[in-house]
Length: 356
Image 1 (tube, one colour):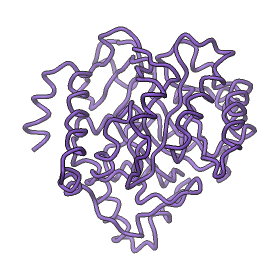
Image 2: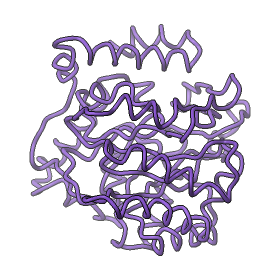
Image 3: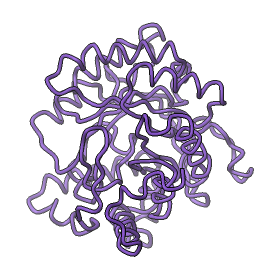
């Protein structure tokens, strides 16, 4: 119904406007008595065999909503009701900022992809905190941390620590985003020294908590081997709890010249193989020292299972949700559940690293 009726209407709107309208609809549903119950009709099964223990937490299932889907925590409860085991809001910056100039999002429906050059549009940490304060969710809430565009690289650790400090009571885990291609100079923060400084600043806040939060690092898929080794050294030495593999790509070769070049990061189906290959490479380098979250081009249960077999404990999606609609999370979780039953597995955790 979504693909035949709703998406064709949304696709006539400018992509950001359509996304905003979808979030408003989800927010309205979660504020309406009985609205969440209706959304839960889309969700997949709940079964102990789908649970994943990672980063000191138990996730109801391995599927999460990736950062970018709900940047300002507008529809967390609704997304969890649709079947996501976790929702990662953000990227959140310390101060509000509009992001880059428009237009800055382009659909590539023939490739089931998006290109965005958003540049961290954010209501700011204080507004997101106000929206989340006192709420309890039926799932795990993560926060993707970013820096303001006008913050120089040497001051970046202060920005990441500020967002973490503002939202520490609302989140269960945090992700240090140093890999978006849309903020000038941001990807240079994937160096060992820069990551050590950022993680140290966040840890200075985190260690004061009675129950410290897990802090992950999200990496770009475009790192060469030397750059990847640098980033992994920084994450490991800095005490990161895990890695998110991967962000969007600047590589247009995966589009096979079908579409015009646009500025920004490419996500969706064309990123699938590149992100999967990077996940395998990272798992080979770090082994089981750092749990991994796989993201990039995931649209089906088969995609999710392949990512878990390659070493991911959890997976996330965003772009496929744009094209697949509210029924997609439940569809993916049901597919994973059927695989677990068919293979007679004790737990979905038995998949993790099976082909690493």
